[in-house]
Image 1 (cartoon, rainbow, N blue to C red):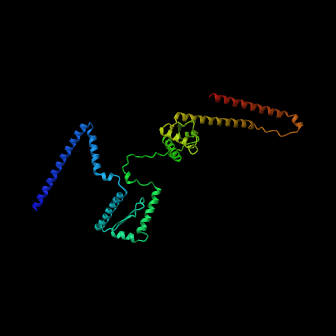
Image 2 (image 1 turned 90 degrees about the horizontal axis):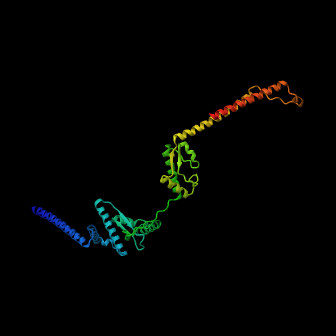
Image 3 (image 1 turned 135 degrees about the vertical axis):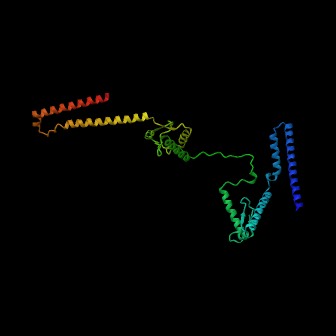
Length: 335
């Protein structure tokens, strides 16, 4: 027992000394790299990075090299066999059964690989429609799927030297129109404070109901709904909205009150005109005047004196009423 403890301590001491000597070697290599950088006239960080790249290339050179088709198949099969053994080990440890099928739809000579536990593989081989025909059917299904989608990146192109970027497509007209609708609606509701405010596309003057007005609408674009406008016009309006050149602003209280005052004065004048007209009609009909009944020619040629007197009085009252109305109107205009 003591001998084992002594050997363990000796091994630990040897490991510590080995690590210390390895660190000393590393420091010595760094010193050599500094000297090499000074002689070459290059920065030390560049030389150290290049040395690390060479070391990585040495470690992973076999992986990064371009493999042949046979080498690629052997490596894939090696990985699959390792995974299959892991499933078998899982059966031993946890008692679970499993199987898996792998096919290469890009290789016409590939017959597939069946892995997993013995029970799982036997189940696949003995099940109706499975086995080799099932693998072929699965391979055909994978080929149909790959024709509908972009092909997978091959192993050789995992580390490309040049990255190809496809140009970004312009958004469709429907997307531009919907974004314009949403942007205008959001801006209007934000400025007006009305949660359900809607844009008056064909008559911007109606925005006064929200006490706002729109600014920056281009003169060369008609005041129409985006569904009527062209995609170019909608795109221009959307760009102006994003840049803040098309925006809403609140109406000043003075201008709003002035508009309301004008409406009130107009209503008041219309009411006064109606009163004057009613007064005139009352002055004409209120004196108990009735239109004379139709008469024959003899009677019409010689009217009675009382009728003439009534006509003269009625004419005087109408003249007085008209003069009074004109005087009141002049006074109202002067006020």
